[in-house]
Length: 144
Image (cartoon, rainbow, N blue to C red; front, top):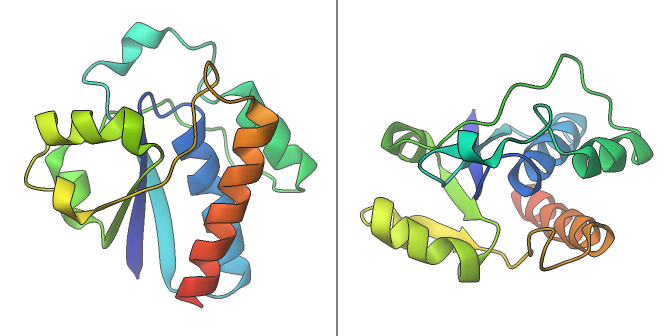
C-alpha cells in the first residue's frame, strides 16, 4: 500500500478534508493508496480548535455523502518519520507552507508537491472545498 500525506498548518480543516475525501474515493476505486494528514505548526494546540475536525470539513463530507466510520481523531503535528514514510507529500499552500517546510524539514521540502488552497481567512470555505475536490479528483485520476 502506498501512502500520501496531506499537510496544512493545523491539521484541522484543509489537510483533513483531503485525507478523508481521498481515502473514501481511493477505496471506492480500489486504489492501493491511502492518505494521512498532519499539521506543520510546531504546537497545534495553540489554535484551540473546538473539536477534532473543522465544521466546514464535516459539513462538506456530509453533503458529499461521505460518512465517517469512527469518531475523528484530534489534529496531529507532523514529524520527520511521517514524511519519511510517505510516498507522496502534498502541502495545501505553497505561499503558507513552503517557508515552514524549508525551516522545519529542509531535507524533505524538495519532495513536496504544493497546491494553493487558502485557509478560512484567505479563501471562503465553499471555494476552498471546491478547489480541494477538484485537485484531489485530479490526483485520484492520476493514480488510477
